[in-house]
Length: 104
Length: 83
Image 1 (tube, rainbow over the protein chains, first blue to last red):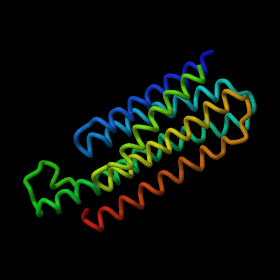
Image 2: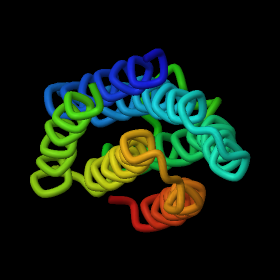
Image 3: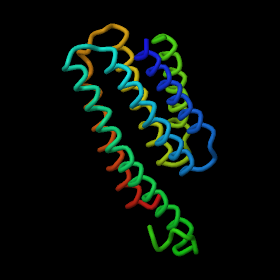
């Protein structure tokens, strides 16, 4: 009972991420919506399945997938957002006085 | 309850597919692909919960890793091309 409930909540969070990706006005805002909601949603669905299933192979695969998602998705989002920011900066023509200029 | 989760995941896949097709920049299309990978892994987990059989679950691990590598490579490409 608790496993399918967690999976349903995870699916709801993934749907919220999709709504944010469709509706938000800016590229970086869309990336924000996807990374926050879909990380939590996917981990909730995987943990719900790991609670429901019995076999150790299945539980190991699910928990490994959840751990890899938590480890790799922020790194990938950081790479992608930094590349997007730099590309936008070049398209605007070099230094723009943005507060993130010395950082990125 | 798993059927309701499938309905929500299908609606989410429609949203990510819209962003993949109509996204104005390359980053938007990468976001669409990432979201579709997330939907696929979630539906694998829900399907395994529904049937009680976890033969497809290693695919979830592989899809997670492939999505990360693809995102990193496209990020390098965007940084080089200045798009």
